[in-house]
Image (cartoon, rainbow, N blue to C red):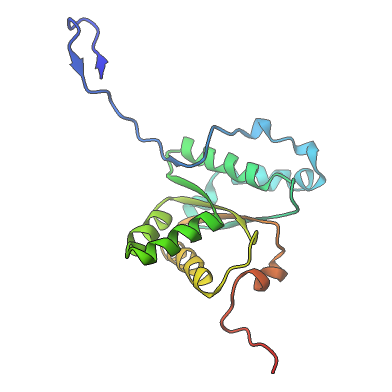
Length: 181
């Protein structure tokens, strides 16, 4: 409780300010993103800076940051996430495996609908490290549910990955993919 000045010490409830930020762990700024650190950063500088306008959020567009380890994908995603928070947008940062493990666990305790809502509600979901581990049929289906629901709601998602698009079939279990034989 905060004490109101000039009221003889009377207490009033402290005003809560909603911080539209979940699990981002700190304030991140483009000023700390060293464009000269890696040639891909320099080559994509104008694209990166355009993302900070947050126009993609208004359009419900998704962003996929693909690159080798150490190129700054996660850091850049956090910078964009923090910028969105400053613009009073709800943001959720999670690793792909943490999200999928929580969704899998929610199937056991019958809270899947509530847990899906947790991942589909924010204006921006940052899903870090997709492809770190291959997904089985169940987790692939859960991943598709989140992405499909967010797409239907026109909510943006940023995905970071070390895996090129051409290799996504190796990490996402695809029911339409047939084995030879």
